Length: 407
Figure (cartoon, helix red, strand yellow):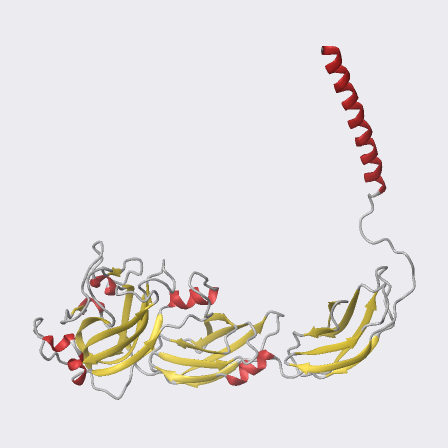
């Protein structure tokens, strides 16, 4: 039995040896990797070339030669002293040139390349691009006075990703970078805050993914006065109808403790319905200018975070008796002023659970809402929450900040 087993194993070993030898021979014969040049005959060039100028580039269409030995189409051009190349598959009859930041004539050299890397004769075309997307954004900039700074708005019709640098002069007239954002939205706005009422220069510049940098847009502006109201004076107004339930020891006072990591969380089963209310006594009267809401950060655009709500204000409380139904229906609105109708919009518009860097940056910066200015000074504000992100009868919020003129 041992001999038979040994003989069987010996035979198997011999078969494996022959297989490995043949595999080695085949492998050695296939060592060269890639296409071996087979000829030096160039392919025919493209024909029927048409160029449609685009923002910062061109859309180029053409007819490929009716030949089998073609690999790709190559387009070369020089911009800013650098040679650039665009390749296009033989399965397409077009290519796109982009990244041109200036209005200048560009010469394209288009050729067909075969599998042996032979190039056809070059087809030369010249064109003038439209203004770059970056310049379209720059030309749309508006800088307007705002409370504590300026408000910048712009349009980005091509929805190209651009980086926008926001600068402001310091007290010595030196320009300092205050913020930088990246955006591909069709419209956008950004407020720069924290400035006194002295006139100063604000400036903007843009860069794109190709390294193009725009001119600097400058404007001298006098910001409007505002200050952040002292949160140590805030208390719960605790009006009839307010949701003052507390989940796991996280009360409403947490939304004015200057700690974004500590939240107010109500009970989901406390019996409240939509809309939900909560009210804050600011502890002072002030001409209110804006409110910043910081939603819970471990539930970006989700759960009980605020989505759609109104902010109302008044300087005195009428019928403050907790037993009075006045605040449990719409009667109170006759004595209060509507300060803002608010909606938190996810920049990317992506579904729940999918958040872009723009989405996260907007959430972490807080959602700012400017308040109407055709009203008297206020002491009390009331939130009327029409919708949370999960459409729930519960709330969780990290922080609110209120700004105004309390002089």
